[in-house]
Length: 177
Ligand code: HEC
Image 1: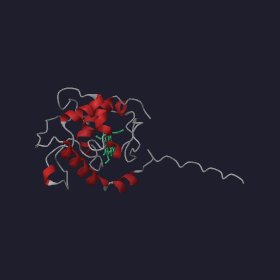
Image 2: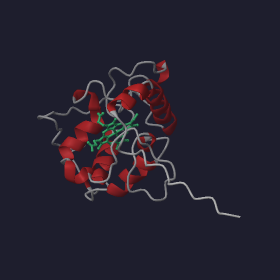
Image 3: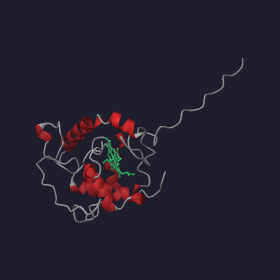
Image 4: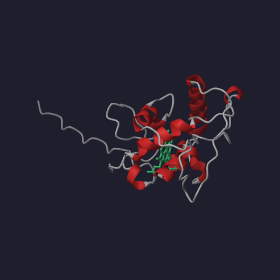
């Protein structure tokens, strides 16, 4: 019996998503924001939180929200945690132990060389300030989180400390894919 030729594997889709496909999938944002906010509520920093004041300079928030640097190991845990950060719903990165990673957004590998800590901070705090049409949820904002249950309104998805931990981790991702 002749062997059937094996078919070439399909091209990987990551990194090839067109802006049209981003737009098509943009409907995912309210769901993600609701899920994230629910996760934050379950995870606990429950009481109405005052946001720390911060200053945007250009496309960055140069100073840590907490006044001190975060912890990269804790930041990694937040990034891969599907109840806290949910980052891997959209992003992929150097997380060999994580089976499911997203392809709606740039791979996180190399972000530490592409952006300064201040630029990473603003992208996490509120990407809408750079791209009003972004599907990336604002992680440290209380504004414009539509369709969020009353009990969860008024809280950022991540705390200021968690933002700093994630920034510290992203800054270590200096190797490009
Ligand atoms: C719902 C999808 C989604 C989620 C969830 C998400 N992002 Fe994003 N992110 C994006 C998109 C899309 C971009 C591309 C820029 C844009 O459209 O604003 C982006 C851009 C970025 C960038 C800049 C990347 C670059 O190379 O320019 C960083 C850093 C980043 N995200 C980190 C995170 C982290 C950390 C989390 C979790 C705490 C996260 N994102 C959660 C969609 C998402």
